Amino acid sequence: MNKEDIIYQQIIAIASSYGIFDCIPCARAIKEFLIRQSIHGKHIKINTNSQDPIYGRIYDDSIGELIATTGHHEGVIIEINNVELVFDNIHHQGITRLNWIQNLYSPK
Image (cartoon, rainbow, N blue to C red; front, side, top):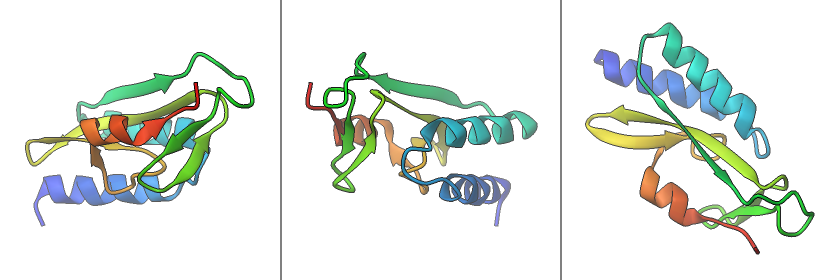
């Protein structure tokens, strides 16, 4: 296993330890790990600009579930094997940025 694969497995382990509604601590833990490893990552956030009980909801089509009630979701983008992947508390194995964004929706 090369170093990139080892890092990938460690990120999966970190992300897997967080459940639905834990995007902020998950992203923070991944960022802290990347900083310790001197690896560049990008913090990605999406906001509905509403904390209304209805319009603050964010759903993820890929799992068919509500993932946020605060109008906020976030993850960390890391380049692995020349592909930018978003890791979050939902997509432990990583997902392309385009798929990540396309999967998220809100009633607003």
